[in-house]
Length: 449
Ligand code: C2G
Image (cartoon, rainbow, N blue to C red; front, side, top):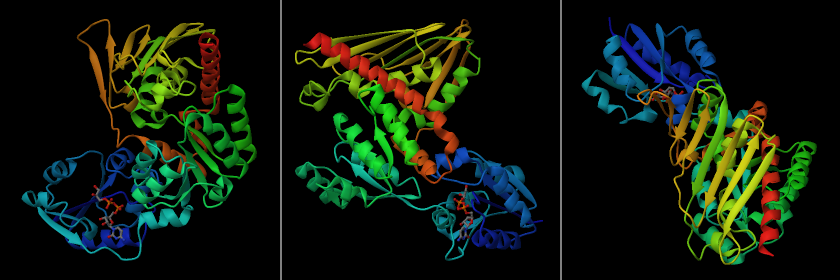
């Protein structure tokens, strides 16, 4: 009996998949089909699979060609499966020619020609409108955003906006993206959505005008400088049926989400303390160090350490103490925020002129979670207990610089597929952060003047 094995995602099952399976079956007597998990697809750069795995398996089953269906969830599994099931032939579509030649030392490898004119990506794009995004601000983050959006299908960068002519011209020349320097409303007319990565003090105004024009908004942190402004933006977004998301990118990363869920699962008991630190020594000439109103550690990085605190202990703290070490020009070089909750406390630390260990510790009544730097790009965390020999380690995936996850979420929400995904960073949590920004600014004003 000749056994054939093939693999695929089989998302939005189509004629190309059907033909491939039919011809794969015809290569032998027994066909094994490996269907990929969402986790595995995400790891290989497919962040936008639509059908759940049970549906994708069912669609393969319905063809009647598969004698056995298995699940593919990790790298290196193909060799394991070929050996385990004794496969004689590995086959896959011709879009993969060459990629799987390494399997030739285990079995015969056959690349079958692809069915032209049909693909899951094309169907995804037909089913959901492609979201055209305009970038507001063409500084340091914008190029990173461009390279990350490539991993999110269903989104294209249409154009950019920056009233500073020099930066706009440079960006347009480097990336070939039409960059507007005046007439923000005219720029908005070209797009469905905007990504706001301009200086902090411009976020509120750009976001508000975009929402009023019916555009979806993904805005870099901090969204606003006051609680009232954040509330106003979320209310306006609701009224205008626009998606509004604050881009605290850690909030959307799978590893971070898993760490939050493990922390809440009771494994470390009741959570009593969350300590988080983020520091990056900034260049003396940089905006962070020189802009005495909008620079400094807190406005630059506050969103990161506050995120796990608010996610785990909530927004109803009883007391907050904000303390900073100011530089000569008044910017905060180092800030510590202490929060007291009814049943616990928390400390957020951030620095641009002081370097500290960038770690996250979530302390509970039975044990604690330790995530070392860079915990905000969660790739690994440990659960530790009284017994120092007992350590549970979680290793997780984190692709690129992580922006793709928030962009993926943004696009899903715009297409109406992510209504429930607000839990990653709720408007209430985002508003609570704006409230802390407002308190920080009031305290700093009092001290500086
Ligand atoms: N296919 C095809 N014709 C098309 C589209 C897809 O023959 N028009 C084939 C692909 O080449 C693949 C199978 O159908 O052999 C499944 O395609 P996908 O669902 O896109 O899965 P893919 O990403 O190719 O996964 O471990 C997974 C494998 O590496 C392949």
